[in-house]
Amino acid sequence: FIQEAAAAFLKVAREHTILRQRYTTLTPTNLDGKRDQNSMILVDNEFFDAASSQDVTGTVSDDVGGSFLAAGDLFVVKLRDLSGRDWLLASFHGDSNGLSTEPTLEALFRYARSHCPDSLLLAGVDANTHSVAPDGLSQGVDHFFRYLGAQRARSVWHEADVAPPC
Image (cartoon, rainbow, N blue to C red; front, side):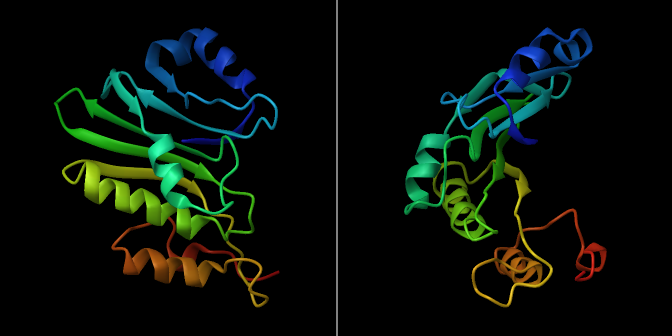
């Protein structure tokens, strides 16, 4: 999962011999070359059928509502692995002090439940959470872990791994 990548990264990844042989670089149909903070996904060609990929970013983005997302912040794709299992992959970052993370994930979870309930959901998320967020203008990491737990979602980071406040 790649976040905040320049659109030029796509050309480099597709021309790089080793990357091109091992991975397919999936990108949203509306790649943003101005702001140059794009979410992308590299899928392993030995595991995924990249030709089966379908960009569903627009549907999920439309459900987020408000002004939470900028072009390139979110990329969501449906695809199948080589054994025939369906997946929903998402790459997300938001420059909103973490405040866009929950509404975006909520829209992603709704989409997964309603459009592909049998798919495995895997998301790479730059949640932009803060170790301390007393002002309400940013999201705290403790709150975010509670949110994930309420959604029955998991993080590769454990609360014990989070750095203490500076």
